Amino acid sequence: MKVSNSITSKNYLEEILSLIVVVTAEILSSKICSIMLVDKTGKELEIKATQSLSEHYRTKPNLKIGSCISGDVIRSKKPIAIFDVREEKRYSFRGLAIKEKLTSMLCVPMVVKEQAIGLINVYTEKKHEFTKEEIDVLQMVANQAAVVVENTKLVEESIKAKEALETRKIIEKAKGLLMQIRSLNEDDAYKMILKKSMDSRKSMKEVSESILLMSEFKSEGVNLQ
Figure 1 (tube, rainbow, N blue to C red):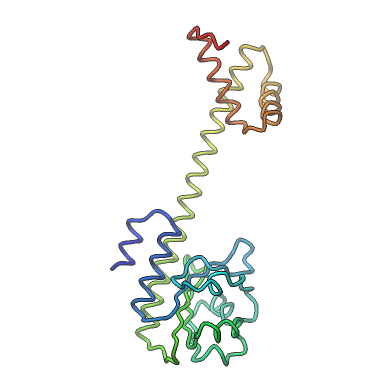
Figure 2 (figure 1 turned 120 degrees about the vertical axis):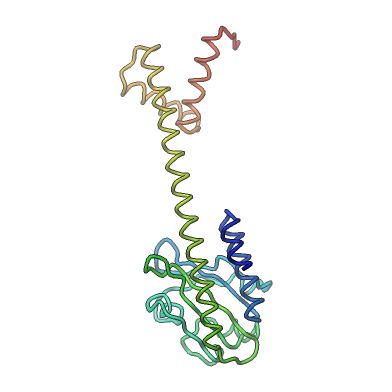
């Protein structure tokens, strides 16, 4: 219930994922719970959230998706449970596991639109055989987390598209104004805005807004000197 509520009421990915790992660790009585997402290259997994206070765990390097356990989970899109990671040769951080007293691990994929975009790990301090119920619970959480990540990406893309459209409208308006008051053609007006942007180290949107503002002041008879 806590996880579902966070998904419907929060807008910030980091906050949502952080809440998910805290609640999941509590539900499954795990020492550590973490969420790792596939990076932009599609070749590595990076930690995005964990309730662990261990600096060693929180700052561990990205994990290459190769012939490792996490890679198998991503490729197969199926959960994998390891009874003792300290004795598992394919586990990438055995030294860290020993230092942090991590023993059993359950790793489940975060799948959306038939694509694994990340995974959720839970670790226990003592040896533990994960039950089907525990696996099902973690998979349910992973599915919810995957939806959160996907929805956040869609929102970000929508915002960027709106901002790009708004910027284009402002530049077009400023360009039209320059064409009118300076008797410039469209290409020269654009180059003028671009040059001013480069010279002033301001964005073309900022330059265009300044042009429009100056024109507005002049039309109202405001003396800027």
